Image (cartoon, rainbow, N blue to C red; front, side, top):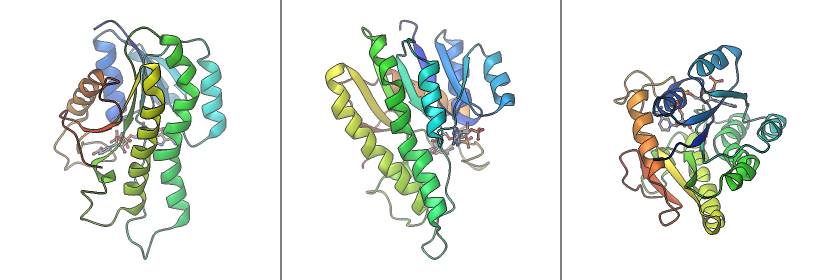
Length: 228
Ligand SMILES: NC(=O)c1ccc[n+]([C@@H]2O[C@H](COP(=O)([O-])OP(=O)(O)OC[C@H]3O[C@@H](n4cnc5c(N)ncnc54)[C@H](OP(=O)(O)O)[C@@H]3O)[C@@H](O)[C@H]2O)c1
């Protein structure tokens, strides 16, 4: 595959950091977004261009858009995400619901909007937007209840992604929503079966295979489709 330029959000740790490491190892250019100076040092040492981005801050998204003006980007991966404290009806809070919907669902759309000129600039070859979703966003598979905020945010992300897929198909930009597996990160916890390196490799493989013919689908990390 020809060398590409990827933008990965939430690259400070977990799956995002391992994606940056794997992409750099195979020779792709990477723009990695982080929030802290310490994380900037880590991803910078991997040879990534580092940009600061807090996806919950509209100013920060605008600043990123301006910083990237004129830079062609082939693949945008909206990976940054948070879990939610809103797990039961009796204890959920509006502040937590707003926060998780903002970071996990609304921000990926606004980051995509900011980066769209860069995807358009890339032209020619394969271009894609990958939203890192979760199987917990599947309404069909929700037999467990709980995790109101997180589940709803990922379901909303899937719907936003499907809208983007329909709109961008004509321009040759593929969109996919991807469950990265249950992964041993700060979010996934120590009991998770996949390590972040394994997950990152499988997520990258799924993104490599995104096409406008298969745009708008909900993918499992193994390349199978998940139900909405
Ligand atoms: N781990 C799992 O089992 C699992 C399962 C399904 C889906 N996912 C999804 O996979 C993605 C990555 O998760 P992970 O397990 O790697 O999580 P993680 O280790 O907790 O890392 C989360 C990343 O998101 C960034 N982030 C959080 N809030 C942000 C904000 N407001 N602005 C910018 N960046 C922000 C964090 O940056 P800071 O370091 O600055 O906080 C960090 O880089 C998420 O979308 C998650 O929902 C994970």
